[in-house]
View 1 (cartoon, rainbow, N blue to C red):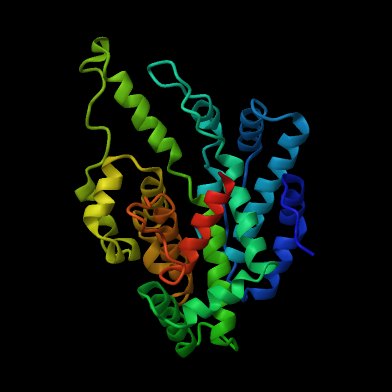
View 2: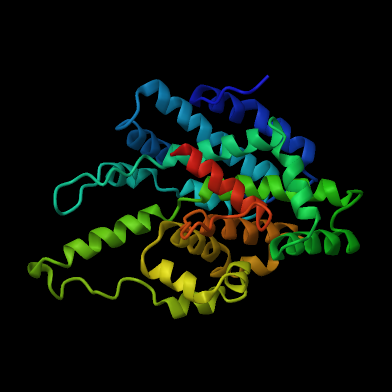
Length: 322
């Protein structure tokens, strides 16, 4: 029986099914003290969501967010990851959704906060219930591209160093893929507020009364970003010129990936993240998928499943949402 995709089913899935799925595939992780939602944060999110949704829908979304935080804490277990959710951008989502250009035309940017959860839901259902996991497993196991080789190398090193106990390669691979996809889909649009900020800033600076009051140098130079993230998988596998071009054009996929990585690299936590290479692999692969989800498909060239299965899954789920 084919699953019926709907928001109601998504809420139910996050409440029950997704935890069952991760409980089956996840190895035990060392617990840590993590950031929780405060009453003030939840209240602010609820107020923001109430502009676009009725009260029942707001309640469902609050539960959805809380369930996502529980999954991050109980199963993903990468310290600092929850900060990206707790401090997510629902507070300015309305401004982005209702934004108009300086010419007075609406930008027609759809709501992205719930959209991120929808992508998580759709991708997990495709893997778990529609058989796509077997195709991803086969693609990565063949080690026919740099990302597959990277993932399998991380798994083998962890097995060799006993960081993965009593676990076969295929089981470890499934855990990494599911966790990577969950994280990538949940945070693939966190750069949207930056895109919005830069657009608004550019328009404000067109008005002479604000001359010299605000600086034109509000954006970090790309050279500084590159210096911080030079060791990341993203910068090691994608041409720097391409990343720079997307960064300078305020591409939200690029800004999302960089923001995501800086959460770990700028603090230095990437170098001590958990035991073994599994968790770092999840962070690095998620960043690549986040970056690629806005790649332009030109001259008949598109993203290939065989070259990067996880990024392909995120991209196709994102496009299906459109």
